[in-house]
Length: 347
Ligand code: NAD
Ligand code: IPM
Ligand code: MN
Image 1 (cartoon, rainbow, N blue to C red):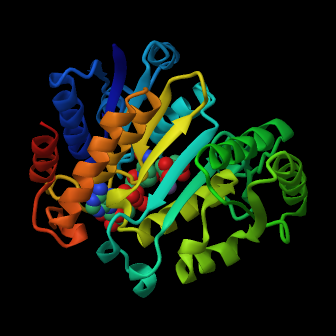
Image 2: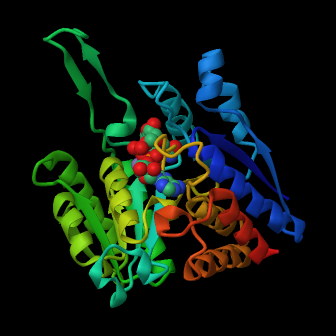
Image 3: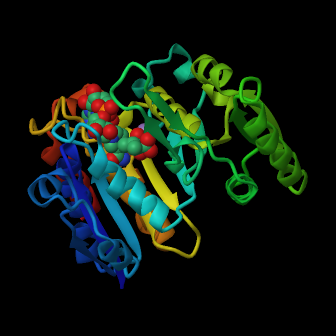
């Protein structure tokens, strides 16, 4: 029996998680061995009790086979303290160093690009997930004065760089992918750049069947829009991976369709849509649940239910084909109705 910890979180995180859980329940009713337990980590609890997530609770999540998270973020918590504690807290506690973010164009009509009809887009971003400017090393001196200094260190370790690059090449090899693209700013940040490029060459040499190239992150942002079908597996430091995964999502239908997985082989993964809590549309019942539902497919893959994952993706593909979607994709359905149709297709 696979046990899943469910963290709906804030804003539309709650709304889309409801539909993702409905998908899991539909599969469970058909005999897939899945159970779940819901946790209340999020802004409501943080504002009420002052506690975002405790050390014990973080450890407790380790008893599950996987974690599913909707989104964390609430304008009432202006410094994002609870989001860092929960989201980055889980990523760091379990050392989930791989942030896998696929961007595949399921239906050419979804892309804002004119070229989409002719060219498939099928990109997988391997975002380093435990270091870089997210490491939390730094501080502020002389706060709230004109002499304030704020330091946000960019941490790049050989071990950290090596394991994410290795994961990207391994994935490329296993899935018959033709190329791995490293992105960095080695021209402006030569220290980190030299480390990443050295390791990229070292690890890449052990995978001669996979082509490799390095592209500056600014140039890659341009080229992803200009000719996205050229790209295959992309490996990126934490921050660049964050930015480029939103960009890649926009090319294939937007954040409403973008899933992600935070992984460390052998440990429970954290599965979440790429999008946030979207305060601008929260509470209206119009958030697109398909990113969350496609995230359950990634989770099912990792849990060893590949056939069920494929069925979920197929149901989403059919819904998109029929235009049974929320307004962000041009449809007129609400969150719940969109989820209900996926469940009906699965049942
Ligand atoms: P966001 O991803 O929440 O929203 C960006 C834009 O995309 C908004 O216009 C929103 O309406 C739209 N959008 C996002 N998801 C959608 C969906 N499923 N259906 C339809 N439209 C959708 O990013 P933001 O506005 O920058 O951030 C809001 C809050 O979420 C912030 O507090 C941020 O820190 C947090 N955040 C959390 C996560 C996470 O928990 N994984 C990820 C990103 C942002
Ligand atoms: C994401 C989000 C988070 C990140 C924020 C909310 C800290 O943007 O998951 O992409 O930057 O990793
Ligand atoms: Mn992001």
